[in-house]
Length: 254
Ligand code: ADE
Image (cartoon, rainbow, N blue to C red):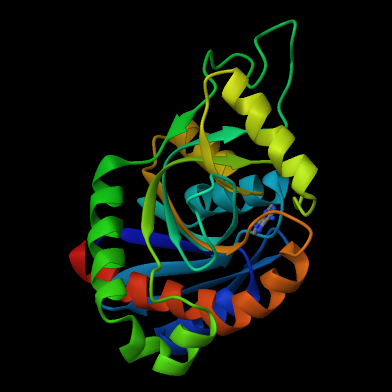
């Protein structure tokens, strides 16, 4: 049987998955806790990416080297950048860019030195399954999240977007920064839907090892001055439940 790693950014997002794990065993490695077991018929390893690109790269490397996973799937939250990307929407990454990488003039801005590229693509097959899973989960949103939560967080109009995700070692919580980040990316031909702090790093590690990778993020905030308040409450109330609902369907599709 193949083995799937499920990476979460925060403990709130992971707790429900651990609770559902069959035959769980905990392994400590590289200062991290990894949970091995079975979930919805699949052999899985659950891990926290931790926050930021370096921490996420270490976790991804451990998943490949020590746990020999065949694929990595990331569920987490992100700040919405593009105007149509609202809190409560899902963003399925088609590819990833590091918005804070700049080795110019040695190589063009955003290009990863020695890789000759700026973007790392998500795996197309995993993305097809994630899209099916997310579409199915959205169709029954009030059933698993509760009608109250759907109304309170105005999730009735929630959508699934597909596109570029920008990663960097900054929690973007100032509108001016979010606008500058988008404008700079756009000036170099990149339209990013959302910002987070890990995806591009995990994508690069997965590219190095030839391991398929995909990520789906719940939009927890608009990467502006309200980002912090939105973020904490949203992860607790909504994002963790989204991750569970999408992954339950996704794992059955593998
Ligand atoms: N993850 C969720 N919201 C974010 C934000 N505003 N900036 C960076 N990472 C995030």
